[in-house]
Length: 179
Ligand SMILES: C[S@@+](CC[C@H](N)C(=O)[O-])C[C@H]1O[C@@H](n2cnc3c(N)ncnc32)[C@H](O)[C@@H]1O
Image (cartoon, rainbow, N blue to C red; front, top):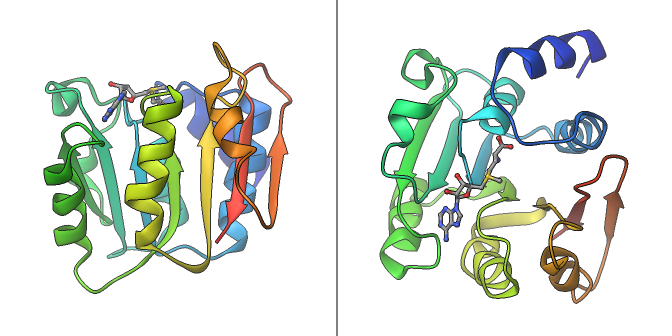
């Protein structure tokens, strides 16, 4: 993504990401030409707006969060998007939430999964276990806040084998793993 476009978008939404790290991540995701994206941890929709911009009209974005007031606090109007933006409200660790995501995907596989919900080791490992199975071979899984708090996302990230990279330019830290 062009840096000027990125900066304008970053300013236009309420987002919980470090600018430099997130620019790095957005460019990693863009390289795999995504059409279907799942995000765990929407909050005010900041990062979700970028995924919406990376896919094409008609493509699918699933945003999952446990906030019951999610549709009221979103910092942009996803209902007006020409992408298919589906918001799932629920605890990502609950089996009924996993089934809602499975039902939305149907036979389709996701290209990218962004894990930015609960940050305990249990939450991160459970989100990986439950949702990375929906990602295609060669797709990406990213973990945000690697270094936040007790660094649990990083502890889980370190257990993953295979191709992975991380960026720690702001204080959060983000890691990507290729399936
Ligand atoms: C750090 S914020 C997400 C920030 C967002 N990705 C962005 O960059 O703008 C984390 C969100 O995850 C949600 N969350 C925490 N634990 C969760 C869980 N177990 N299931 C679903 N959502 C969860 C919180 O309510 C919060 O809205």
